[in-house]
Length: 322
Image (cartoon, rainbow, N blue to C red; front, side, top):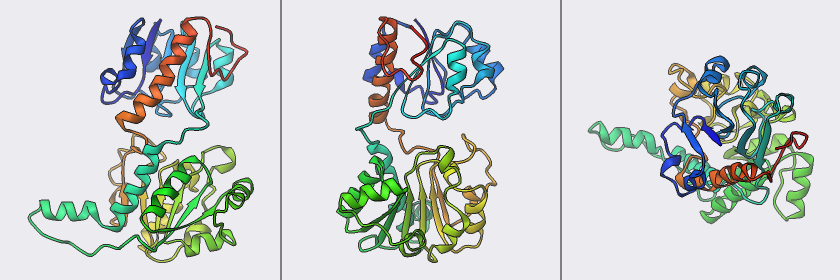
């Protein structure tokens, strides 16, 4: 098959063991991001299979109607960026392994890294010594602090294990079902939503973005956080209602460590989430490791080979036949 891989910004996949799985296919790798559907369609006119890097490119009817040879989209995990009805209408099968039992340990590690870097002022201390200075301030210890995890899922539970290992106290907030599961597992759940935000030294978000969770974090939630507390978001920017984090940060009252943005790639260098001294921003690297890519794309390439063999797996729109 003619396989096109989108958004492999550092041409990473060719150097990973999983790439051998595509040895029987004609593969084109695109190492830049093309958001315009018409220009993207022109690039991939001969594509029979399209490989996605998570949610880096939106796939809608405006693109699918321009690529008549496309038969398969192969990716991993959730697919809010893919218009599934438009795929079906254009005869394009979507395959996505939902990996129900496998958390992204890379994302969990990134969450802990952001917390550590924020509390110990690591970026600022590095900048200071590189500028010919010495210490620029005094950080804070994590042991004994309270970490509030919003969302009782696989990644959050991996974060909890890391936090407890370094002596942090962990408590939870989530949907009604999530809180019930947490209580059934013997985990500590806050008495109320307001108490969750008020008593957490650090709040870390671990919720999937879907219509019911869009803007689930409100201005009231952030206002309930104590001075100098830290909000960490390695999940999705859309979980926070538009503009409220920027407004709260502008007050200089709380801190934030942010790996996700409303627009990605984020290139607005004047954006307060990039410029304010209380914010530690990173460019959506929570899951971006060689190990995680090899794990994820092994599944994605397996889906391509299964389709080519006439026995597709992890099919989302089963009404489309191979």
